[in-house]
Image 1 (cartoon, rainbow, N blue to C red):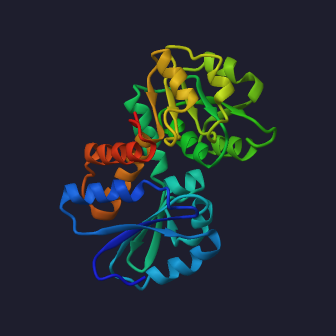
Image 2 (image 1 turned 30 degrees about the vertical axis):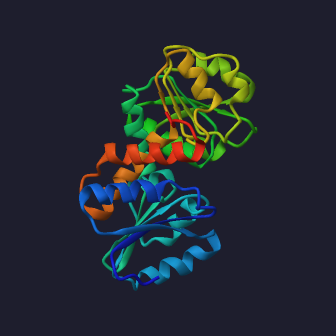
Image 3 (image 1 turned 60 degrees about the vertical axis):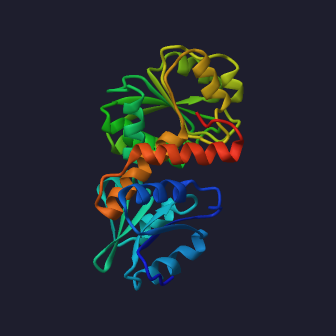
Length: 282
């Protein structure tokens, strides 16, 4: 793991699909930083040894973490930040003297993306899905001033940990069954979809209310059926690429101490997605 030049990386399994190297390298090029950023395949079982090895590498500047490492990393870092502890997940590991600092940039990434959509203090937010990304979304909604929200889940009981997390953050989270998704969306003032690809296709077929902004955390393939339905209704839509750019921008600043060039990162991400799909990423 020793490197001659400063370096950073994204860890996860699988990780080959990650756009993080594209975004971070674009930022480094724009900022004139002579660093390398790569991807490292790392399962949860290998995270302990990998983190131990980088403690001895003075050239290391930080890690971005993707699935399945975000929950495990919370227990492995020496000091989690307040927001990482609040959402119970770490997606960024940074050297801090002899310690490893764990942060969560997904939360501010969701906040910035929702603000980009024109969302202020949501009064009737709806979450679709209760997985890992929903934890950051709950934290973001609480930070934006929401006091209650609805989470729509496909499996009964899946929302329990998310409801508990929301309560700690001062947010009342009401659980709804998937059969009530269309009604929940119709009554919402913003929707954050955190479900896997294809999960919302049936919901998309029911149409979309024109005044309800949508943050769809997926970015490949794009647009999803849900995003396409919202666009047809002329509703404000942001995709997972916008979220990825905003959270990566916070990582760049944490690792380098410099303000991230968001526009350059977004353009690089759009080009990379277009090359993968053969169409504009949107």
